[in-house]
Length: 267
Image (tube, rainbow, N blue to C red; front, top):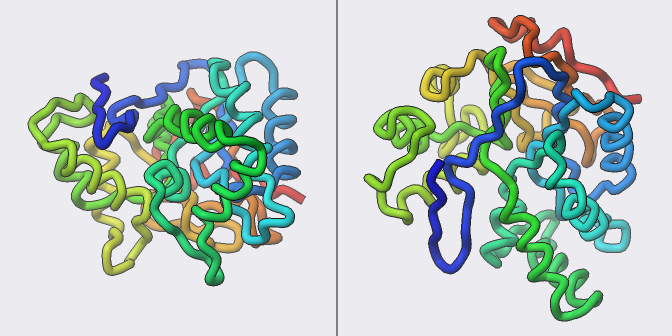
């Protein structure tokens, strides 16, 4: 796949994680600085053995309380793990905005600035190191059984680009700025939102990438929610109803129920 470079930063447009034919995948949504949850999921992955893959759906960073925010610890661990061939992380909107130094607010707190403060308290090079780690995060992951994993979305603009580019084979027929904008829309898109998507858009995205069922995080749902051929899932952050998906990559995944039965509630 082709790499695109824009504004001095390298992004992995078209870098798709393709999971192997015979494996188990554990899918985890937004951690948002919860280091304890992160360690629990890493331990679950380790216990699964050499054929178990884990996919984090982005938004590893930016806890609500700077005093308890474990974002830096998470990223430093990820920096050591991300080169293992069964450990995968996708780009979330919070990583996207941190890399680009764009403010993102929750409860009146500029989380981009708060994370910068945490990093600089550990030296002038720490923020650059963290950005380099986040730039390695991919866009989507696809299992052989048709399970498609992404942080959020899809966006209608991304659907247009994927269709025109013949699915996931990207070519420079679009300007970098157009691809940047489409990806930004995708990592922020929520169902039935003004700038979001409807069930038909999910169907079109799955057709574009050759998938059957999609699983995302991003939108808080206090557990999980089915939206057409999409599952929206919470694994951490501000909910007591935490779920992960644990599924064989060769297991039937033709309907959303095929995926839902593999959801595990984390007590």
